[in-house]
Image (tube, rainbow over all chains, first blue to last red; front, side, top):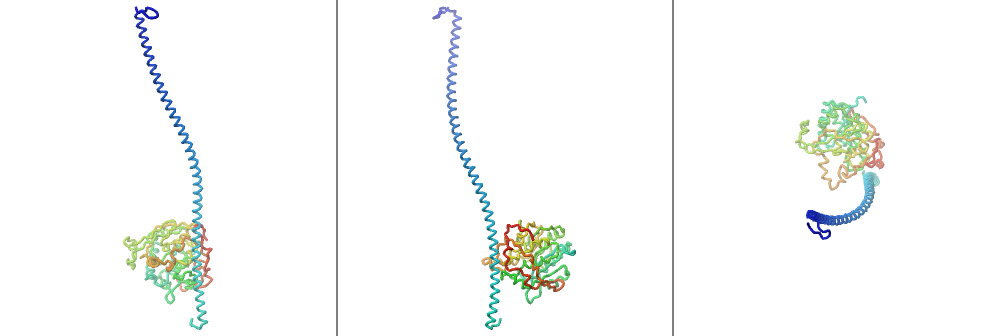
Length: 139
Length: 319
């Protein structure tokens, strides 16, 4: 028989069983305490990750906003570029036409110069003959 | 015109020994080409335009008729142009010979279904002859051929296929490329007669130079919507030609060259008057082969016709 503090005597078997139960309970309490601590650790880790993710999200949102602004600027530039390309094509066409017209003008000037020179030579011949006749020299 | 030949070959020259032994070179090439065409069964005529004949010398047309009496009056026709036309049409006293107006005289009077404008010392290659023999040339197509320049030292007294086709004798190949196929184009421009008339021949509006007038014709044809093609055969010329021999002399003073200023803007297209090729000139038969074109002012167009110079990009249409 074993004497207990409160209830007096219990049988040894009952006592051993109670002690065994107490040990298991203490062991279980310890494991639960450890699990609780682990969970707390994990909770702190997840909180840190959540903080990081939140921070990253804010960064991405900021980057997205900047990218959107850049895209809008690029779209505006692309529109400007298209206008410039159209102007360039128009300028090239105008340049081609101007060159061709210049070419035609050069050819026309050649013709006029040739005609003027020929007419000048013919006129001189006639005038020289007339002058020679007037002076009585043999033609 | 039922007896019209399939082909008219238009050439021009005069009895001036241009380039040395001009008549000999002319006669040998003509004899060769006639023999090859006849052997291939290509009905043809030669039209010779003699421009600005030299006073006191026989007409080259007369010598030609004597040399080729076997050709008959329909196989060889010559047109001797009064030298006054040269003076009346001149816009550059340095030009001694208006080669392309002379060719227009011949082209206008050609009777063949197709007209080949070439030069007197050009030999037709085997590929040319076979294309002509096929009689499959198309209307509205300007046919061009590359010219092979043979070494000037080869013996031309006995010219045959072996000599012409021997690669060892070839000095330069004057390649031709689309779209205009210029480069020695004056040596081979083959076109149907109707299109020749619709184009109105070579440029007679710009008469200050004769150089590049042939290439200018290619551009005119292109601007008018004709198809330009390489016929596939080649022509031969012995030596590099007079122009090549003299071009260095005028490199520093191109405006003084006897062919006119090489820098003229030959991209510009022209529109000849309807009386091109001395169409209004009276014709006086001299003998069975030869017709003389006496001078008349009525046959000479205005000295200046600036509206007949048009922009190259303009598609003109024909006529």
